[in-house]
Length: 182
Ligand SMILES: CC(C)(COP(=O)(O)OP(=O)(O)OC[C@H]1O[C@@H](n2cnc3c(N)ncnc32)[C@H](O)[C@@H]1OP(=O)(O)O)[C@@H](O)C(=O)NCCC(=O)NCCS
Image 1 (spheres, rainbow, N blue to C red):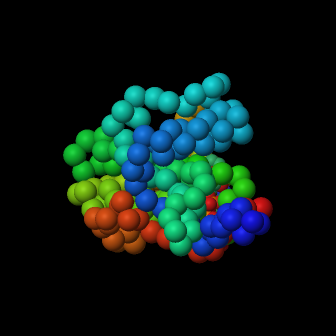
Image 2: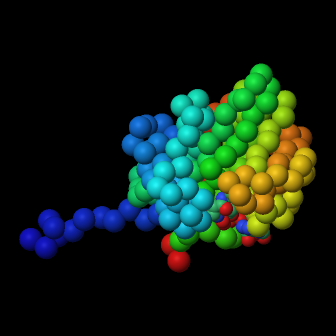
């Protein structure tokens, strides 16, 4: 019977930005980072892993249907506390097919800063690639210093925490709108 063979394909309805909850998700985030920072941007030869990964919290962007998560991780960022109250975000990456105007990158930034704020952050910093400085400025970040990282121009920037209310439920995270890959 044809009807018996029909498989319902879940309709992707949105993208949830949340704390990674499994080793599998963290592995997918690491794979996305390799695609972006090694293959696309060629900042690292084959792996961008460093000592911060052992201590960092990993946030992911996961496509969702009404039935739950579907598909791979399409965005990620990591956060870590370098000294009491001082937090850093790094390795922000969104899959090329899901960039621009979908709000995944900016929502990852929002959850990153708000999660740290919920854990007692007094200052949240990031080394931002020069190209991305205007985006961070629009998201209420200010340049602290201009610094080269990995031989590329970056701005050390900090977030205005008054625009990032503490988030104490990062496992639930935030949701962005309806998505369709380009
Ligand atoms: C930077 C990056 C994470 C942004 O993710 P994204 O999902 O495209 O960002 P959003 O859709 O949330 O964009 C938010 C807004 O900023 C704009 N924007 C995105 N990248 C921008 C940039 N480099 N410069 C200026 N504006 C930018 C978007 O057009 C959008 O504008 P809108 O609010 O008017 O619609 C993504 O482009 C990426 O992964 N780049 C490669 C890796 C990288 O550069 N990482 C950051 C290192 S600092």
